[in-house]
Length: 176
Image (tube, rainbow, N blue to C red):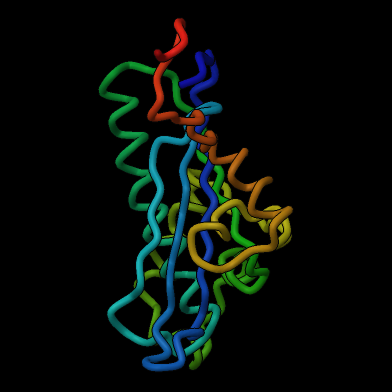
């Protein structure tokens, strides 16, 4: 943990849409920070097939938002200062659909998630922002990434390399 007077909640949410060739189910992932500390993360294969990439992304955003709500509630109960949480998505369609919530026939199958997220954004209880894919930290949780991206995301998730272990122990005297 890194001491920080900053209690702002920042989350990254992403999906890997229908890439499983056997069942076409999506993998959703998120990671949530309070200040500089990663406090919650998840990577989970969904039980149902998403009909569009926007649906899969919206489901991922809605799941992350549910955890953000819980974290903000906990922080309020602990009397910690809170600010409007920020949630980053690399799907421009999700951000645009939230800003302009015109219902289309292709969005009816995820209408509840749409209204859930839209309500929080419209009432300024969540800031939903677009983030280009190359900066999407949640990518490491759901899909293969290049070596450079892997090490960059691993650092941002604050995952440290384990110390080098030796079975020999410390040898102070030569063995006779």
